[in-house]
Image 1 (cartoon, rainbow, N blue to C red):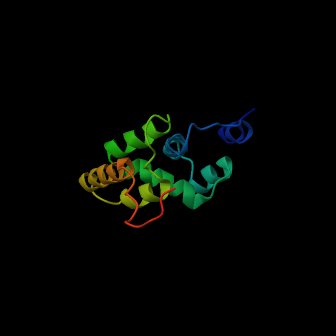
Image 2 (image 1 turned 45 degrees about the vertical axis):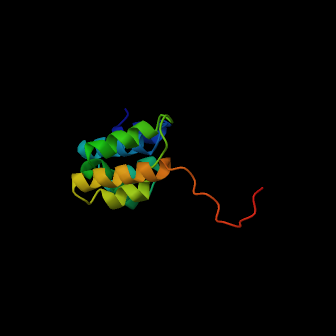
Image 3 (image 1 turned 135 degrees about the vertical axis):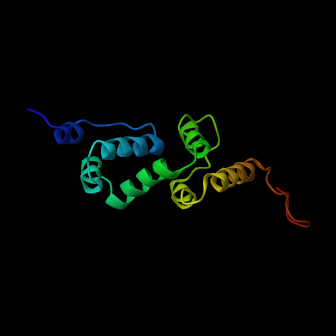
Length: 120
């Protein structure tokens, strides 16, 4: 007879990216699993798992959609996990403003070389 624990621990689970992993962790916690149990089952640290769940719970819809879109490779990735952990503590309006600023910064053309710099 199998249990949820053996199912997760014996089946290799391939995540499309960190966003999918975070949603999976949130689902397991919503099903009653503890942070340490999820961490053991997925071979990750408990603090990492808890941070991913916190991002899913507190991020604005715009941030979550962008993070998910980045998994497809069709948009420039700007949602680094450490950045998400920091901004998810802000109100949604500020998260959205920070996301727009970050997207704009990554889309900006490279700065020109300073005067007198050697050109190759």
